[in-house]
Length: 386
Ligand SMILES: *Cc1c(COP(=O)(O)O)cnc(C)c1O
Image: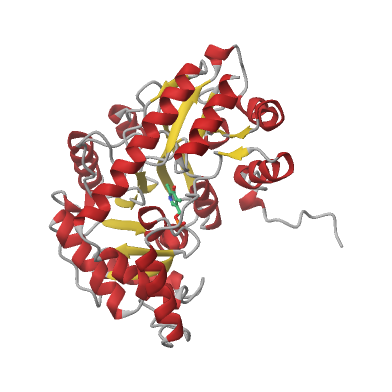
C-alpha cells in the first residue's frame, strides 16, 4: 500500500476517545469509574418490562418505520407539550434516531457544506468535533471559562462570520454543568434571527436542572421555531444509555433534511426499545422530579467529598458531572493527573483539557460523574481524600 495515511485528513487528531482510554484503565486497575457518564443502576423496572413485552410480542423486532414507531413519535409530541407547551406534528416534525449522537451527526451531515463554520461551546462534548469534521465543517469554539462557565455573548457575536452556518448549543452543558438562563437563551435567539443562523440544540440533560432552575428549549423562543433542530434522548433521562433511543423535533423542512442523512446512517435502530421509551416518556411528573432530586443529592454528596479532598469544585447547575480544578492540589496537568489517578487512588476521572481546542483553557480541569450509587460516591471521595 502507498504511504498515504488510512484515516482521512478530515479526522486528524480524532483517534481514540478519552472515555475508551480511561474506562480501560478502570478495568485493569479495578478503580471506581467516575469517568464515563453512565448510571450504575438501570432505569425503572416497569420500563425494562415494557421492552421485554415489546420484544416478546413481536413489536419492533423487524425494521420499524424510518421516522420511528408512531407510539413513540406521539409520546415525544406529548412530552414536548407537557413540559414546554410546544406543539409538533408527529408525522412531519419528529424523527427517532439512534441516540442523540446519531441525531447530531445526521444534522451536521445534512446542514453543512464543506467549509461552513459551526460555533459551539468548548469544552465540547466529544462527538461534536468528529461530526462537524465528517461533514467537512469547521468548528469555531466559544470558550466557557471557570468559575461559572457563562458564555461571553459579545464573543459569540464577534465569532459569527459570513461563513457561519449554524450554532451547536448544549444546555445543560456537559462537562461544565452550566445551564443557560432565559436571558442568555433570548440573546442567542436574537443573534440567530439577526444573522440568519440555524441552531442545533443538544438537550439530553433537559430533566437534570438542579436548585429549582429550569430548562428552556431554544425552539420555544420568538423566531426560533423554524430555525432550530432540537435534539434529545432517552439515555440520560431514563437511565438506559445502552438502548440508544434519541429524537429530533424541528419544523418539517429542517426535519426532512436531517431525515435524509439519518436514513443512510442507521436507517432505523432500537425497535423494541422505541415502544418502551414511549411508555417512559408518559411516566407521571413524579418520576422526573424524583430522578432529578436523586441526582441533586448525589451531586451534593460528591461535591462535598471533592471539596474535602482539596479540589476546587465548580458546583454544576445541571447534568451528571462535576468539573473541578486540580491546581489547588499542586497539580499542573489534568491528562497526566487522570492517567495516574487510578493507580494512586483507585478512582477514574476524565481530563476536561481534551475537550478544548485552547490547550490552556482547561489544563487543570478534571471531570467526575456522579450518576453512581451513593456508597460508590462516598467510597470514591474517601479514596481521593486518603
Ligand atoms: C450522553 C450525551 C450525548 C449522547 O446521547 P446518546 O443518546 O447516548 O447518543 C449527547 N450529548 C451530550 C452532551 C451527552 O452528554
